[in-house]
Structure formats: C-alpha cells, structure tokens
Image (cartoon, rainbow, N blue to C red; front, top):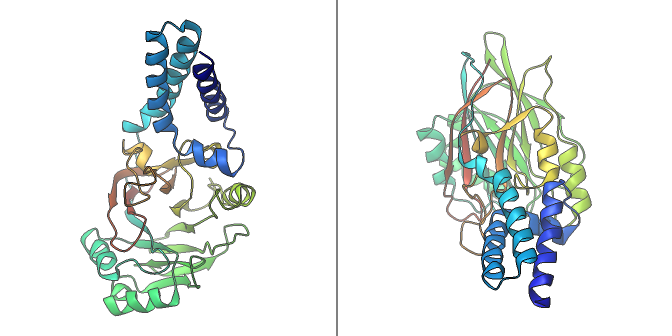
Amino acid sequence: MVFFAILAAVFVVFAAMRLFGVDGGRLTASLIALTPYWIVCGLLLAALTLALRHWWIGGTVLVLALVLGGVVVPRAFSSAQPQVHGRTLHVMSSNMYYGEADPQTIVRLVRENQVDVLNLLELTPQGVSALEAAGLFELLPHRVLEPARRGAGSGLASRYPVTQLSLAGPSEFAQPSARLDLGGGVSVEVVAVHPTAPVADAGAWKSEIAGLPHPDPDGPVRILAGDFNATLDHGTLRDLIATGYTDAGDATGEGFTSTWPSKLLPPPVTIDHVLVDQRAAVTAYRVFPMPNSDHKAVFAAITLP
C-alpha cells in the first residue's frame, strides 16, 4: 500500500506540473518531455491498484491519467486551418549533429520536396563545405549562415533573396533569422531555432525560447523552425505558441511523430518543430530520417494569406 501511495504521489505531482504549465528545473523539464509515456504508466498503475482494491489511489491516478490523455490525444488529429489562397512555401529544418548529417540526403530531400527555405542547426564550417560540394547552394543560393564548432552554429538557405534580420534574443547557439522576398510584394520572416537544452540549463532554455519573436499581425508572416529542445507538453513552448503560432505537426495530426533520437533509447520524443503564424495554413507536414544525425528532419508546406 505504501509503495503504491508513493508512486501515486509522484504521478500526481507530475500531472499537476504538466496541467499547470510548470516545467521546473532540469530533471522535471526532462520528465515532462515524456508525458505520453507517463500517461501509459499512470493507466497501468491505476489498473493495478484498482485490481488490488486500493480505490482512492487507483481512482485518483485514473482520473489524472484520463485528464492528461484528454490534453495530449488531440495532437493525433488534424485541426481546421485558415481559408487562405496565397502562395505556398515549403520549409524544412534539419539538425546536422555537429555537422555530421549526410549532405547528399539533405540535398535529395530539398530537391524532392521542392524546399524553399532550409534551416540548419549544429552547422559547422565543415558541414557548410560538404553541403556546398553536394550542390545545396545551387538549389538554395541565398543564405544566412553562422557556422561554428560543435553544436553552436546554425544557418538558413533559401530559394528566394534574403535580408538578414535579428529577431531572436540572446542565446548560446546561433539562431539566425531573415526576411525572404518571394516577389510580388510578398515576404516571409524565418528564424532558425536552437535554444540550449533544458537538461543543460533550464533557466537559459526558458529565457531563450521566451526570447523568440512573436507573430507580428502588422508585418510579414513569421515561421520558426528548428530544434526547440521542447515538446508540446512543455509550458514554455506552449506559451510561445499561444502568442499566435500553430505547430505544423499538431495541426496535421502528426503531433506524436518523434524527431529525436533517431534510435530507440532514450524514449523518442518530438522536439523539432515548425511553428507557423496563425494567419497562414499548414497543408502538409512530414518527418524524414537523416543519416548520421540523431535528429530527423521536419518539413511543412505552408499556404500564405
């Protein structure tokens, strides 16, 4: 009885943090990323304790598990999108894992999916050279690149002319941004997102995500794409989305499709995202395996207003 009561107490605390949007520190933020797994564990604990006639324990855990499920399950279903009829922009993001991701695969995905703008995280000088040799910049000739050693570099490459901006706040890793001129007076602003991981510094992670730009209803459509080191169960990310963004995976019913790690352990989670200004519509979303990287690439087709 005492053992089950302790397990139930842990689950109750975790559920309360998730429901009230409290990410906490390094440990709790990491555990909140595993919310779908926690729900399954909660249902199993409830079934076991109810079978043993620990009614209060089992009932409490069951109710909370069902409430959490009600919050999480909708991301498996597509949602209505704005009725817009503007141009379509294809966006892809790939974490290159210290520049080691296979450049040929990146170029192939860009070509096959007619990618218009590609965000690259953990971009190194060697990675830039490999991508150039693979022909990326023949497809996407306009670029804002900030390569660096290890995982600190980032960049974006575009089919359309770009003007470099500075939309993101201070961060440990580069988070470059640019305005894309699509022609005909249409422009879009894009940020390559890569905040530090909460397991390294939860405070910095929160402040760096909070420092990402909100949509500007009087300006061009904004798109944030990259490795957020956060899932849709983190209050920190949900607060950003609530400023006027739509998560492309969530909008298309692919919110449970994992992006990291590309192997089975630790448990796969969804920390790479494409956040789209709510004035635009997400018409397609896909996740692609990426050889030599621990992240999968994410792709979204976006119809502009």
